[in-house]
Image 1: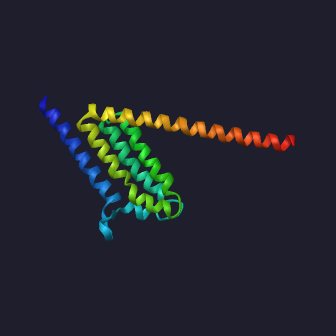
Image 2 (image 1 turned 30 degrees about the horizontal axis):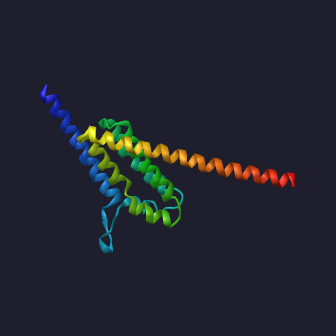
Image 3 (image 1 turned 135 degrees about the vertical axis):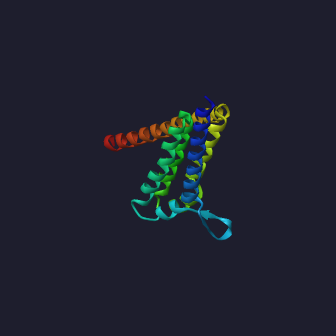
Length: 162
């Protein structure tokens, strides 16, 4: 029975090592002046139109491996959020490229995955807090959009009636 557990731990350890190497390659492999670092993701992101999508696909591999490793759903949601933020903001010309280099979604996601797999109970508490804040954020965005739609419709009504 211990051989099965040891084999599982070895596979998990090899998977995390592979993901750490990939995240470093994508986010921190290239030293820059001033102590900053960037990775291939920052370079790929410079390709207009497709760079951020390719970077997002590479980042999604880490997400998929996290799911295979048994990460909690909320950790996977946090990881997906990091990728979404990187892809969406990264698509903004120039600012997005700088943001992409600084955000380092892959390094963040591997750290989330390691924390979840090493101490699931503590990670669950942090995940619940994140999901709660995400729900509050979505509700706030919906409220703002509702107000904007109301103002737009009111403006259109006043234009038509006047």
